Length: 247
Image 1 (cartoon, rainbow, N blue to C red):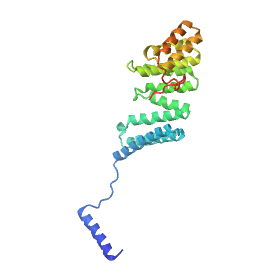
Image 2 (image 1 turned 90 degrees about the vertical axis):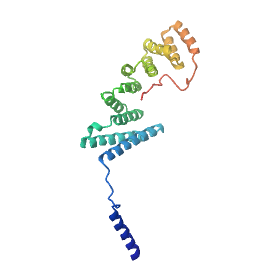
Image 3 (image 1 turned 60 degrees about the vertical axis):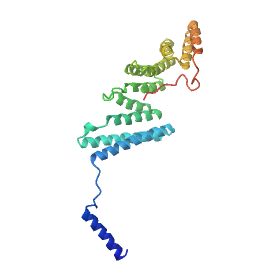
Image 4 (image 1 turned 30 degrees about the horizontal axis):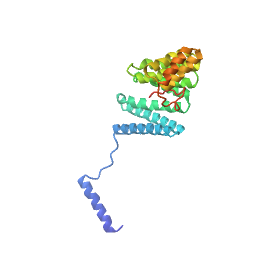
């Protein structure tokens, strides 16, 4: 640099100092740091869900674990600043629910059940009881059908009568579990309940199988006639074990 250039730069700095323009970079406040950590958690959950959709289940699970770690760090930081009352319980629910989902997707059933249990037993999440459907589906996958049915029924108790669509989904899962156990009469009760309120072809077909297994020819004829009146949508996409998860 020439002497003239150096002199010009020095003069500029001196002018800024006189005008109070040159300031040290401000450190972010505690609340700004907390807000950034919350945003980071949301981003990790979104990335985890996206990886799951892409079939990259291991990567999705790792992102979910990272989100939980970051959220716990955020909680500790708030507590250290005597701001525990500002802990975002919705964010805690979000990261834990996503973790349970990813554990379930990876077949890590004991871990997923533990995470789901921690959520449903937390009194801060009164509506989380419906997640017992997901727990029931895990037990179903493990062929623990009685426990699966117990979970489904506990979830059903949490769903108001106005939530008919969800109730029918849970009833369908109950019917599937009874069918797998060979308890066809109980499966019929569940399937017939669905057919009376929200009939679909697959449930009607499963009902026919139950009637056939019990040798009930009259019901078999009635069921077949009713089945013919139902539009055959999605039959190829669904099968007896198409269990419903709830979010």
